[in-house]
Length: 342
Image (cartoon, rainbow, N blue to C red; front, side, top):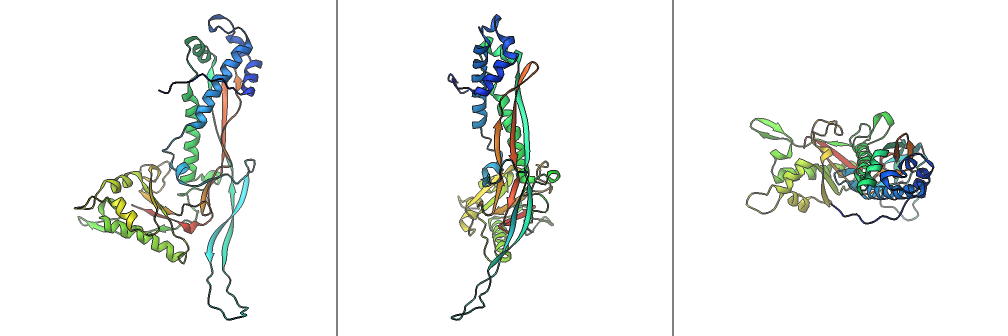
């Protein structure tokens, strides 16, 4: 367990709220050994500042969308809606004569898309008895309460990035109507049955599927899009990272990276597994090939996780938390490609 150093900073708004409320008044005197409301309010304001700081700093690597996709904050946090254009590149050049006036037009076909910004909120707090016990026993306020609030917030944002939120008009990678095309994987026959799953395929067959996705993207975009990142369900990733090509020390994962043009990185995401039914609606393992560039698509978070000054409610203090999220903004849907049944 990390040893805590003495924390001397505190939020003035928290100290004022504690000083003007009844909670700290109830803690003055007696076994808590506070001589004044001022002393009690500063003490617990410092405790809360430490909790808030630790809560801001905590990271959850399993929230893959927050670590995988470019995160932008271009939409003002006060906006309720915003408009962006979803583009398909079109046009081609040709050889021209001197003084030609019939130059072909290279352009983009864009359709306006209205996006929505929604608030995600929760809270955590401490009762008078928890504060009393903290002072009496010489223990700090439980940081895990703040971390739990942050975790719940990040989980919701991560889920929106992958699955969207149809009721609130937020778009995710796996949600309907985002215009990301789908690719049909090849099949292999095993014991008289046809399968598309990678666990039934050898290295060459897997490479053919992934390069087939690259070729498909190249074909529909006239070689404009060259996706560089492949995201696999966690169990598929583990299989490829540990299964070696017969009679070699080379794993299938390394083999694919070495022989798939344009592919720079292969990542894993538990959200793409068939078992992740709260996020993955397809009922099967899904892989996602995309260009990792914020000009193509990004997770828009107009306001990141924020903890407001405490509020006194009855015999406890509560810290409200809020985040503003707009889901995935997919400027170029053809820069991504989904495949089910991997």
